[in-house]
Length: 231
Ligand SMILES: *Cc1c(COP(=O)(O)O)cnc(C)c1O
Image 1 (tube, rainbow, N blue to C red):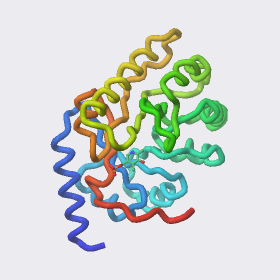
Image 2: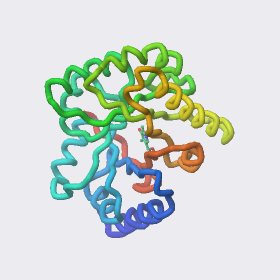
Image 3: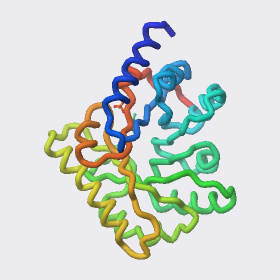
């Protein structure tokens, strides 16, 4: 890794962090990026990192064991056979995308006696290429999700489809915010969904305008991603 790339990452991370309101947490999406790049962002003050694959993330966690105050976020689809590892290793899982996965996590958390903070992944616009609940499916399954009594629901995560106009993007983010408020007010009101994990390199400013509390930024910090290695 050249020193040029390292210092570019540091500069980008520093500028971005300094530009954010205090209410917004920056999650640097380091998927497919080597650990040295994570170290560079860490040196600039970033403490939250997002990964999309469990095994790849665990390898980097091991390589970065000396950086003890990193918070690790899983943001990619979680296969049920990796759910136990995800519970053990991640501080947050943003990508809980089905009732079956929620129920599986509930059983695992009960046994493991430790639980990451969780977000529900919602498709506020239809998108056949993405995982997640539709708004109507989430509303109808919400009582069953709340019945997973060992889980700590903290908020909603959304990824918008490509090709929306700026007003459409804002409307979709606002709708995510309304959904979180609405679900939080449904009895028994066990878990207020305070976190809105929305906004990526291209749309994070609009997301912040619409109430995002966590933004997930990859390319704007780390540059273009290499192709993922097959696992
Ligand atoms: C890759 C990814 C991001 C980061 O996207 P950029 O466009 O690189 O900022 C954010 N969220 C999720 C769920 C991702 O998979």
